[in-house]
Image: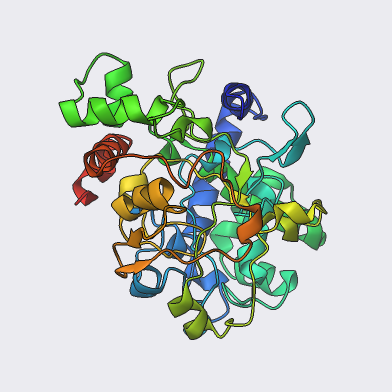
Length: 376
């Protein structure tokens, strides 16, 4: 079972890792916000960071392709990804990718496989990804940036008059500005009902209270959620993830694979990270934060499940003979790396239908106030 110490260290580290004057950081945030929303930085000028991570939708992709298939449509309006675009709300709290020798686990990083060590490195990838923003190279991205005189003056004021003389430094600056925006309070408001409950400003309903009790109960009869999604923190701002990686045994999203032409592929998850060589970690993906989980579907690394109740039911009954996926009315299929799935903390929890409903009721309390109207 995993320790909550990871989360406590992460929360403290995230707040004290910044550098630069307050005014400089503020100016980078302004620049980063503009870059984050700029569709001209994609090949066909149809996609920006916000396309797949909309600030109005809990930082997910609200487009039909994502909602129905489980993954995002690329800038070329043809390519379809193989993974669900994760929310980037609260993402800046994730520690840099590393192997924790005390826990014996890979921790942190960005993307579902942790392949980018931090937010800055993550911000560089979508521009050059052929099935995302589709730019051919760094030079092309920077050429688009330099077409905007406001960008040029802001880059030079923040990163030096000669910033565009070195493409590597200029691209690092672009990623740095976007990362600074993603570290702003815009992405982490900590004002959900649960935050208000912790502050003594909200009373949980009986259903929410029962759901919380099940959520944190790691003994027989409990849901064991907090083993990977700790509900406590040193500063009363829990992130509901230990930032580790887990193989949940999620079935294949056949509909998505048919549409994107990857029916013969297997997603190795964490094992595809160049820093990882343990074959037992095939099919392991980053443990997501549960903040805003009620409004950030579809769910799982491949966007297979559309409803939050289905996710809870899967955790509860995955290994129970005859258990049915309520979205297909068929028994659960096995995942791509079935033998390596987590069987210690999910699969046959023995929860009742009411228990599942109560857990969902609690999970809805993790929704930031600005997104509560999206709950249904």
